[in-house]
Image (cartoon, rainbow, N blue to C red; front, side, top):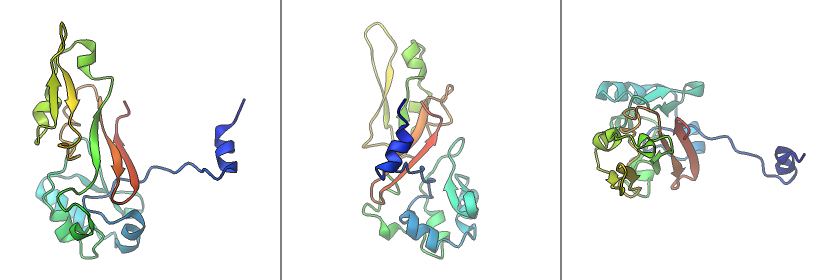
Length: 181
């Protein structure tokens, strides 16, 4: 039997651990760690805004913790950050705080011929549409160009078929959160 982990190590392909999902508009991970003072001001601003998406993570650094929270992209966390660890100007696209997106998995009730549109109803930007099936129920389809990665669809799914995942391409950091599909 071949040990792929050992083979990868010998070929200098060490598996990278998934990085935590930082708050919206976070600078690249290395810069974030060096700039963030772990003061908790962004977390407090998020709670005050009513979202409660941000939580203290490992080492006291803030992380985005979906389910049941979602992000409204109010920007209060950025305004509260005195160290510029959260910086709108550092992003190539100031309108997009991250490149993560929702993903709808095979556990979706529509695949079992059960009508459910809770994710589409919860999506504030109408990124989830339902494609009619001949002789079946409508199946959700996600428009990745419209999805903001806010996570509003995540807690509404009764079977946990939605995950928030993707790559923060502007920062070359990978993040995953949610229930695996």
